[in-house]
Amino acid sequence: MASMASGKALAFSLNNLQKRGTLYIGPGTEIYEGMVIGNTSKGEEMVVNPVKGKNLTNMRAAGSDENVQLAPPHLLSIESGLELMSEDEYLEVTPGNIRLRKQTLKDGERVRTKRTAQ
Image 1 (tube, rainbow, N blue to C red):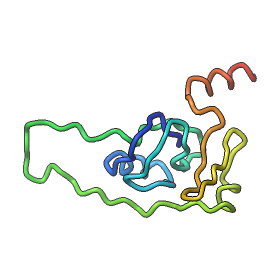
Image 2: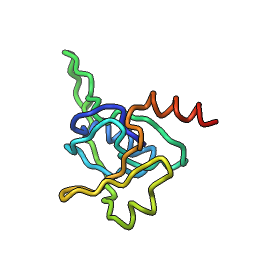
Image 3: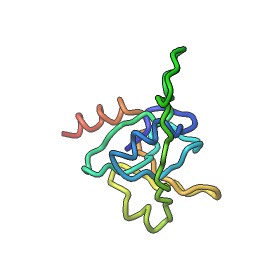
Image 4: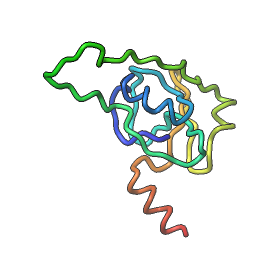
């Protein structure tokens, strides 16, 4: 799962994404476009929006708001990052973080380069 947007990851969107695979980040993590935030259980590449919040309305109903229960994220180490990394990804190591990112950050450019390579 690669991010399509920049900002802070929200628990609401991560709750929907954790049903599709393993997450490498938790809520409140600063993310950027092209950053790999998780691994899908089916194995295919997926572009997702982890900064999308819940739409708010003026209508309130008892019990309509659900508590978000997130599983703890799978924190990457250098060894596990190297094992999980695919051919079109980089392992980014900084003093504060270890994370995966796509070589080409923009999704449109990734699709274009994949199409020209074939």
